[in-house]
Image (cartoon, rainbow, N blue to C red; front, side, top):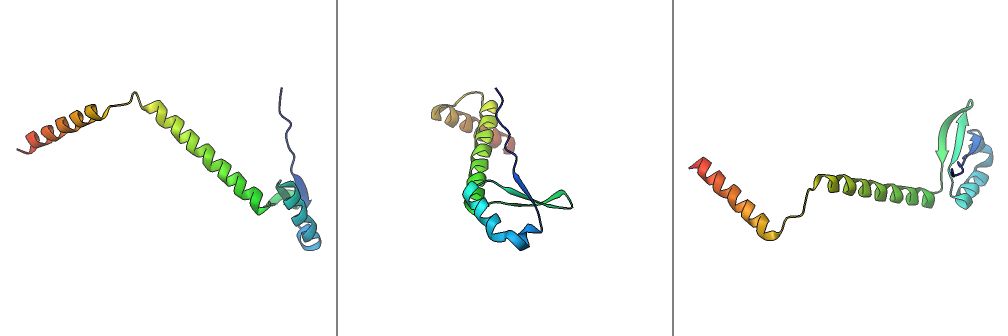
Length: 100
């Protein structure tokens, strides 16, 4: 089952001059971006500030989850505090021996 693809509202950029209140209201009510075109090509995107903030927060969460997933793939196992201390002691002794 495929999800329906949302096609954003598209308007000519000249509507900013003539219909700004309407564009603002639509963006606020729908929370969806409005694509403004110049000569038929996308030029700007208008989005309500709250919708933008939610999208950015969602993007930050997704990025953090991806970072955690990548990090989990590189961590072979957890190390106890005692094992960590023993390794640090071994490294310190090795460094002392090299500088002696």
